Image (cartoon, rainbow, N blue to C red; front, top):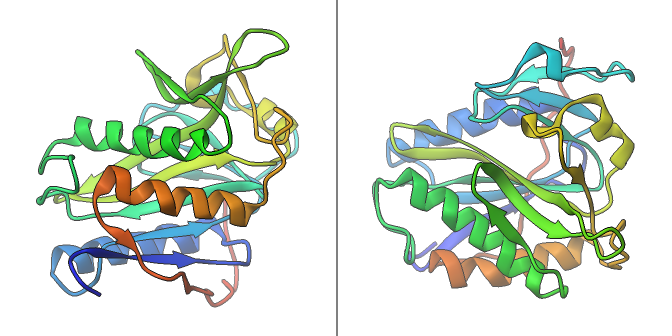
Length: 236
């Protein structure tokens, strides 16, 4: 792995949230100690809700009784589930990445937004950001209303990032009704499928890889498979 490359990993099986959280935390520590490579980890979770540091109890309804977890990231309530591409980004923010300066958390979040927007453009989707609304938004051509297609939630430990982004390819959109997504009640949630965009998860992954270099400057490695050992018992 050269400085011009970044490790890209992928898990083909659904990853339980506690296992993902534990792995990210350890990798972040190892990156800080100079013992692990920076990386992007692509995966999907089983249906679940996670709460950020600003989450409000009244914004969780959860009629299906899905597991809920405290994520430790910024933000409010988020849904994860099959059909949603989650990309966890673990970078040493003490150094610059492309045009993103070192030690600038705001610039890092803006770079994540630009990464998603660049990838969406390859499918003919115009992603946008809005002041006061975290994430990436698109306009529903049928209603003219703005709907969220990607969520962003980050955590930084000693200037190493973890958590990342979640892009709605074809998740079960009714599951978002179990929360107030990111605390925003006035706007809906959308997906590639809802917008009539026919694309596979592999298509989305390729678009994200192509957009990465444009925004962050490094080149993704070939995808490295990551299969975690099954967790014996999980407690929500």
